[in-house]
Length: 395
Ligand code: PLP
Image 1 (cartoon, protein in one colour):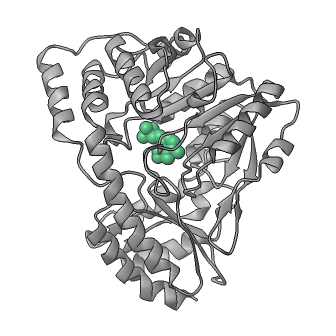
Image 2 (spheres, rainbow, N blue to C red):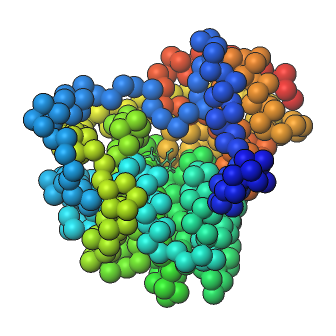
């Protein structure tokens, strides 16, 4: 327990928040302009001008007042069109709730379904915020590890996932494509999970924020919306952050079963009331006019991914998991001693490349590193040239 906890009498929720390992790397690198910043979880392109202009227009039109907690009707309609276009699914606009980014979509969803002591199963290594959100709300994290094999493959054994269920299990959290591993759930596995959760009356919380960032085939990653009905215990969380480089706009959405949209937005009312009105207008433009930008960004990521996967795979002591999705490359350092944070610090100092230590991603992350490749391919090449001698010397 921290001393602030003792002197102010704070809640155990804050006392137990772990130090963010990625922020520690960011702090170390902050004042060094030479560092190539690859620890981050966002694309390096600016938000497209047409989205900025839509926000400016909305400001000039006076869209600066309170609005619907659930989100502007025209934004929820634009979301319905977006899901129809990309996944060929009809989602009623009443099922969407506009949230303060994907993070808030998850927090509200958990508030809707969790009682203190309820267990949520999460495959790990995982985006740390999902584990923390569960803990802060009094839930219990149950983690199941991905399996990494020497040939560069990665899988999530469903029998182990199902075997982790107890009478206290309320939900299974699936982030596919997954941050930080780049793993993507197959359609077949999604069917199996859906059937299992239906039978056990468990919720699936599907975090689909990286759905467009897939590399093994064209199009998008499959969505649980395609195989579930409107009355299944399914919550899908998503965000404007990644598709349109809008991380600072803090806009996202949750999709809940038919009839629960109002309930989730009631919770939103007491958390944030809504997201800014003029930003919601810009989000309509992102959805309706932003497909080309997504395609451009994904192709750029594809090129940078290739540079880094090929280059790092050639190095001794480095096992690379070629990501099926997301914009992260996850790799293991074999036979290198030391904690991943210390190794990341060493790489930062020696190679001037900032990467995220695997320890930031919960159980099973130690010994691994994560690189964000949502960058220009030329910068990926430069990062590779800096990393190569440093990683060789580590072995
Ligand atoms: N889900 C995953 C797996 C993420 O990696 C992130 C961001 O890094 C988010 C959700 C939420 O992003 P935001 O809150 O910026 O919309």
